[in-house]
Image (cartoon, rainbow, N blue to C red; front, side, top):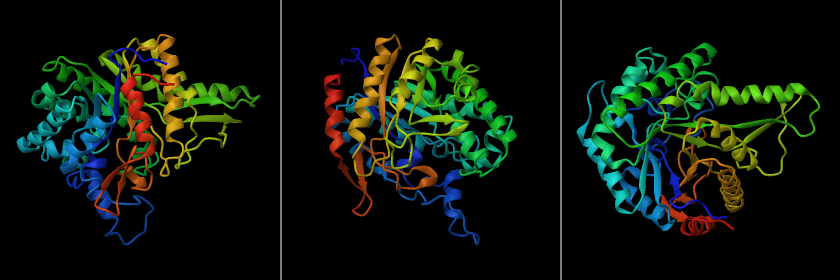
Length: 396
């Protein structure tokens, strides 16, 4: 199966998960507060700490991406570093990210840059974060400055990563800071994230001519094959709409491209989750490659170029990763053959990293991080398999 000429082959990382010592964020404050609390809480399982030290070892990471025959890298820049105090932009931090982006580009990697990947500056969090009705204006100011300072080094910009996951985990489930469980707050945050993207898009476009989009995590939902309950089908359609159209419809006109993060599928039987236990990640997520094709075909109606911005498997022993990549890419190729304008694929993740409240134990990296031996980078066996796909622009 050949992929289109010029197809983007990449891997993805994010700032807080890999850089280390990201001390001016709401996440860092939450992580270190666990050590001082008198009460016991479950999460986070680890503090990010030095993470993967990619703040200092980014060139080593980009060398690995080059060895993978990647022609692009998806990465994020850290708002808390760039605007550590409200209205004050740190030129030294911008200079650092210029070095990072130049290092990627000098290795032949196009740069797909995310402006917000879950973490907030402390000052912004203290103002209520995305509950604040002024948050779209505040975020748009930051986005414009990033485009002004770094735009010449960015091949594309993603405004916000997985906005509904952020709202769900932070304001519904409460497992992420600010650890709230309030459905109304979650809805308000989602609406303000829509407004923030739209405001940021317009602000960026005043100074930047290349593509700008948003990254959405989308789960495929369907009725179990053995279900005889019509409510399962309708419930799956409703949940899918809330996960996709509810958010994308108000923002898609302000998108030059769409980013899709896909990890798993959920099936329903009598309105309860009923997934098979045949192909699961270390996190227990059911892997169903047909799900990624189904979503791509749904997204086709927006008439926007699409990128798979994250797709990966937690697999510490590297038992399933080759099969995972193969099966997912076959379905991506089928979607392209059925008219989906899919432009690129970024495997998540280039390296093992800090997986948010789960800490370091889930291993998504196609490169292992040996945390017992100075964070040594060790390509897994699946590394060479993905490298061949990227080199050949094709998959058997």
